[in-house]
Amino acid sequence: MSGYSRIKQTGSTKFSALRREIFSTELSFLMEAHNGLSARIVEEAGFRGLWASGLTISASLGLRDSNEASWTQVLDVLEFMTDSTSLPMLVDGDTGYGNFNNVRRLVRKLGERQIAGVCIEDKLFPKTNSFIGERQPLADIDEFCGRIKAGKDSQTDDEFVLVARVEALISGHGMDEALHRAEAYHAAGADAILIHSKRADADEILTFTERWQGRCPLVIVPTMYYQTPTEAYRKAGISTVIWANHNLRSAITAMRETSRRIHDSQSLDGTEERVATVKDIFHLVGNAELAAAEKRYLPDRATAKAIVLAAAGGALGELTVDRPKCMVDIRGQSLLRRLVDTLSHSGIREIAVVRGYRKEAVRLAGIQTIDNDRYQDTGEVYSLNCARNQIAGETVVVYGDVLFRDHILDGLLTAKGDIVLAVDAMNAVLKAPGYPRDQVSADRPFSGDYLDDQPVHLKEISADLTAESRVGEWIGLARFSALGATWLAEEMAALESENLLDHADMPLLLTRLAAKHPVCVYYVLGHWLDVDTLPDLGDALNFT
Image (cartoon, rainbow, N blue to C red):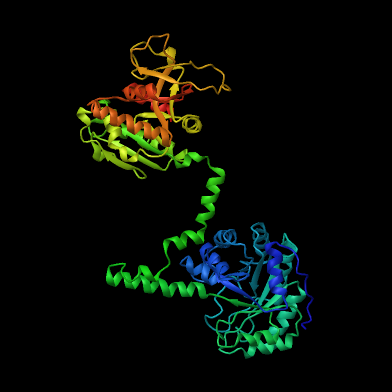
């Protein structure tokens, strides 16, 4: 039985979990990781703790293991690592990045990020990797003990582990010096000692272990003496083995082979079946958890798709000579870009745009385009019919030249009804008869009561309504449930059979639907804009 005291197997924090590994009576293992993905792979493999290697983190950043990455840059990587896994992590803190004051700040910042421990080595800052050169200078013992005391005084959790790494054997100073330093570091408050060697056998390590007599846990890194059976470490009473850099090294081998094969063959044949699948990546980074969270926190509207009617050219003078008005610039973004962003903000990801005039100018990431090549002699319903394959399930139909606030679309998506139209009640009185075309008649005007949830049903959309019958203006935005989308497709088929499809407009289509099915009205009060004229375009500049 080793002489250092054992801790109780209690607690559930990362700090206590690492302390259990270091102080366990059984040999424990820490596996190297250098980013969030490798940390998850380590956990998936079954390890109970991580070693955040300074060498491999630096190398993964394309830098040397000589403190070329600042400690705050390393801290950013460590935060991704600890966030990506439930495992406790022992950080390779090099020399502590400076003197006692640097160590104090480092330990506090690690604790804030739930990083369970740090290992600091008794060399000079900036450090040089232990396997480079001979007789590297070591820190003054008293000065290094000050770093240890500063670290322990600065820890924010009593279970935080500070490991002191002794480099005396690496630097050729001999066994007595290594033991002397280890005893001083233990007395200064180090929770464990990491004894390091670069010999090809474990004789130095096992001799040190025998003479150490279990004063506190010993940690080793058998990178050079890898042929020594692990059972020898168990018999010697060593606490923890760190597999220090093998994930990055194996990744380098695999990436070299894959890059060479693809370069030489100019093909993925023979490679695709040898590498991890994209689904495996999704699994590792937790896509399933995100999907479950979306179901929990996002409204059901996220399943809706949208069809944007944007085949018309518009009449904005020189601005629409080489592009349709949906692509006219408004403060650095096209009108269509702003509309698509609004749809996306409400959870609509599948967006189809029906284009016609200057269709080659309608190019936008994140959309599907559908062409109405007869845009000059057909109307809106014909354009919508061009997208008939998209009309399935919950569907939003919107004009391509309108802007509206997010809350209008959010309200429309949650409103009751299989067909729901957004209607501006303010425009019932602001517009003169005969304009606009999309005037609405319904069975009830806007009541002015925001708690009024009684359904309002469309009667007619027309430019020729009387002032008494007008309740507002349709803003060019409609939602169809799965059933409503079926009714929509059926009505377009009826128009086609009556030879009315080519020239039908949306008011006619919606009025016909209202004669056969309930078409609900969702009242809004402004906060939208229809861009038809140059003055409208000026208003759009102030709208955004």
